[in-house]
Length: 489
Image 1 (cartoon, one colour):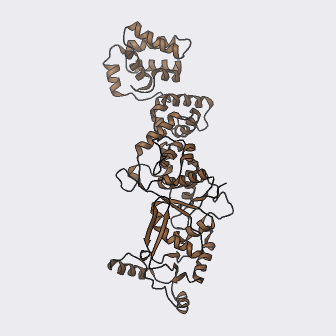
Image 2 (cartoon, one colour):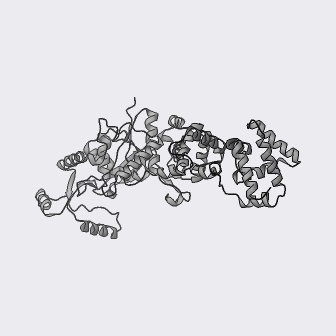
Image 3 (cartoon, one colour):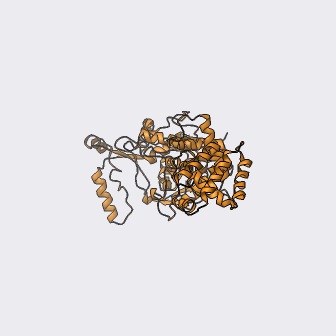
């Protein structure tokens, strides 16, 4: 077993979005590829925005995707707790260690004072940073301010000169000027740790070997490296994955399509398709292929093949890919994926009978090539489940109102189908062909109005498949009802 340990540390301040899902996937893939451990850690120190509902949504999304974790809140191991709000004493102890060693200090500046400092620095044309007002306060003055000031924070004593170099698997060597790194806050006035501090402490104590995260965190890395060194921690390997941008290269937002995993699920995107698509957002398998089962992605995955360039989101490509998975998955799996959509629409009962399951399976078998997302499936197949289906107006005009032969053709088809003893593929095919020969019309003259009578539409799956799924009695009943409704007798 490898000693690789990676983590995904979402904040329960919202649902799991596409960027977070890809980060989780890349971590999971690396753990699978190396035989390491995938740890789920919850960053819930933002008390105002965190909620149990959001946390539950994250669990559901990861579980739906199949990204199972080896350690986490519900899978405790040697390095817990795995929820940051349950680790506050650990952060306090680490901060006190830095204070005692002179590597951190108390800051008593008020919000108003800090705002004024930022204004002065900004007006001078410098990068906004804390000016170090409380850096060198004598111990006696610190104790006095603890008693007189409303609150205080703990800041890290950061070097003001020199450079910090970050070695990143994806981006190589990235250099940061220390003059732009201010004395960041470690512990806020409410006693809660900041993101940078808690992440460093947790990553070290949880023995995280590789930190694989979004590019937006790269600017945090020099600060985190300095915290780690001051605490005597070993640095992990860093890998910052590229941003996901909209097709116009702007920031991805709801106007470009779904953004959360839950929304994709509600659209009818299946997990296998979404995982395949997410894997290719910023990573290349090294060959010109787009459909890759998860098992193959695991075998091919490497951090070195993650690109530096932003990944471009393409909703059409995702739906195309999803359509491929719908067409090729086992029929029973497709049934399980589609069933909730038909139950929600009320056309399949909450506890479907075996007859209902078999009927839906038959419908999906002939319709799967025409469905790209399962959210479309109910509407696309509605005529299989209701007798009051709508008729295409153009089709009615052309086939039922302008074609004087339609009544005779449909009447004959009805009689021939009723006379069949075995309502199976060859018999039905030959029966329709026989009607065309008998009435001396083309096969299209028979099939098009028949399809319209059976489904209300002029396009769809193979006519023969429709007849066989509906069965003899329903097919004949629909033809007779159409003859009467449009006065074609």
